Amino acid sequence: MAGALDTSTRHQLRVRMTLEAALRAGPSHAYLLRGPRGSGKRAAARAFAAEILAAAADDPEDTRRRALLNPSPHPDLVWIAPRGAQHLVEEVREKVIRAAAYRPFEGGKRVFVIEAAEALKDESQNALLKTLEEPPGYAHLILLTAEPEMLLETVASRCRPVDFVTLPVQAIEAALEGVGDSAEIAAAARLSAGDLECARYLLSDSGRQLRTSAFGLGKEGGTPWRQLLATAEKAGEDAEAVTREALEEERKAGVRRSARDVNDEARRAARRRRTEVLDLGLALAAAWFRDLTAVAAGAPEVAYNQDRLAQLESQAEDLDLAESRRAVESIQDTRRRLDLNVSEELALEALAVRLGGGE
Image 1 (tube, rainbow, N blue to C red):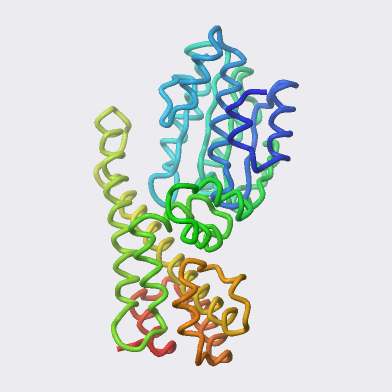
Image 2 (cartoon, rainbow, N blue to C red):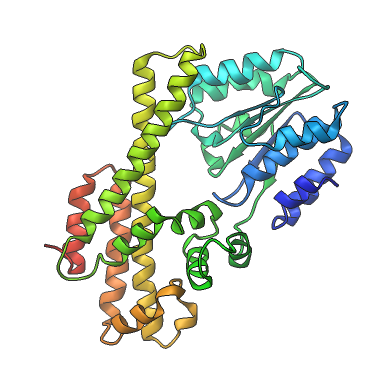
C-alpha cells in the first residue's frame, strides 16, 4: 500500500479500503468522491491519482512525487477547479473532454480530476457523458463533490461512488497541532463542523476577526454587524483578485476567454466567497448563543468556544434562556433570508436590532 494514499485517508478507513481494492483490481474509468466539505476528498483524490499514474510508469517513485505536488507538474494529471461560482464550459471541454482523446505523455495512464463537480453547468455535465460512457482505456476521471444531489443522475450513475464521512473533532485537532494554542485549536475544531479547511481558516487572522465580530452581534452599543460584513467583503475581494489573476494568466497562455468572461468569473468568485464567509459568521454567532445556554446550564465542557470560557461564564450569569433560544432562531432565520438574495446590509442590521445590539 502506498504511503501517500494511506496518509491522505488516515481518518477515512472505508475510503482507504475502497481505493486500495480499486488499485489492486485495476481502477475503474470514473469515480465520484462525495462527502462533506473538508473531509479529505481533495487529498485522497491527489493520492489516488498519483498511485494510478505511478502503477503505469517506468519510474513509479518520481511519477508519484510529481503527481503529489500541488499544483502538479505531471503532464498526465489534469486538475480543474471552478474559478467562480461555476466551472467554465469551455475549460471542461478543452482540459477534460478533448484532452482525454490524447494518449499519455508519460507512462500508460492519464487522470482528470474535477473539483467541486456540483459547480458543473448542465451543459458541461451533458458534454461529459460520452467521455464517461466510452473513455479511452488509459483515461480515468475523478469527480469531487460536497453536493452530489446537484449532479445529473446520468453523470453520477456512470461513476463509482466513494463516500467520505465528517471528520471527528479529534482528527481535526491532530491535523491542527501547532497552529495555535490547545484551547483555540479545540474551539476551531468544534466550530468547523468537521471541515478541516474551515478550521484552518478560523485560526487565521481573518478567521479570528470573524469570530470576534460574530460574538459581538448580541452586544448593546457599537456596530459589530458592520464588522462582520466588512470581513466577508474583504474575503470576497481577495477571492476576486486571486481569480482574476489566474484567469488572466490562462488567457495570456492561449485559453480562449474574453475580458468580459474574466470579469464575470472574478465577480462570481467574490460573491461566492463573501456569501460563504458571511454565512460562517452567522453560524459562529449561533454557536455563541448555544454555548451561553450550555454554560448557564452548568455544562461548560460541551461548549464549542473552549478558548473563551471566561467570557462565556461572564455573559451567562444573568442569561435569559428563552431570549438565548430566540437569538439562535433569529440568526438561523437571517441565514435563510440571505439564501434568498435579500440585502445583506439590511438583513444584518435587522438582526442586530432583534438581538439588542443595533445602533
